[in-house]
Image (cartoon, rainbow, N blue to C red; front, side, top):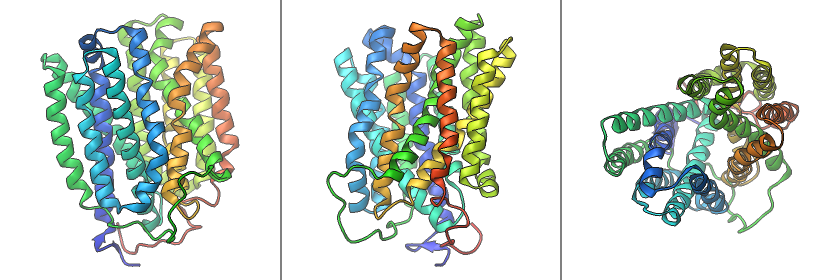
Length: 397
């Protein structure tokens, strides 16, 4: 095959996909940074806000069973354009809520839109990777992390100048819709033929999907432990100041973004299986450093290792899922449903373990899951974007 797909240069499709990932991340960052405004506007404290924040995960999980059928039925260009536009538009909903019930409903829709857009862009990313014939998925997820940082920075600036979040979200959503839809025009028009049969309405995930999904679950569990609990850990276990504790989240985010942007080069050298094993060793070592850190600096170093270790695993499991079975998009949806189940399990599990023992024991559990992730890495063998699959695109990309 030439260096075009459906009449479009595959390199152009690659950068269009990267832009869509960045737009998706920018929505996430924009909302997260204005969460205090949303909570104050609705009038809820930490406890009820925690209930509301379960809704995006529930919405995403409910949407996943439908996403594979959508990818089979519609071409990627319109599917990605519509789902990313819907995800951007959903950013406005939480700022309009005036009660806990309305906020939960808004976040349920927000999560469903996020899940559909996430599946569509990852399925297209897996297709681009197959056609290029080498690992590029990590860089897509790296651009997602960059988008999170940019979106949160814009929201932080808006909060600093006292801009109403409703006006900010309206303006940001409009701009991101325009960018996302424009980027979608560069995507590959149609997925590679899977087969002529319509996927079943319901089917249990296959064993490879389950195992690869569980690898992703362990990685997402570790990521959420670093993002959601690192500041709390430093504040309560090492008596750090509020500003120093908040730095832990920045460390995890920045190291993850950096590792993802350079991760494809590592994957090309080591292969998927060895990369996951090395990542698991790095992340588990990071949790070990955090557990035994005598100083704040050492703990921050441990969280940096955790961020580096989990960064490229999720991109790898999505890429692997895109090579399973006659319906790759359905496999991606299945893996995403299992992996993102961590979004519902991790906060409560870590908190529950901490309540009956300590937060250090909770991080010990996280370390155990990361070790298990490394032990299961062999499941990725045969589903790699590397030399076992012949490139479908020729020429430089």
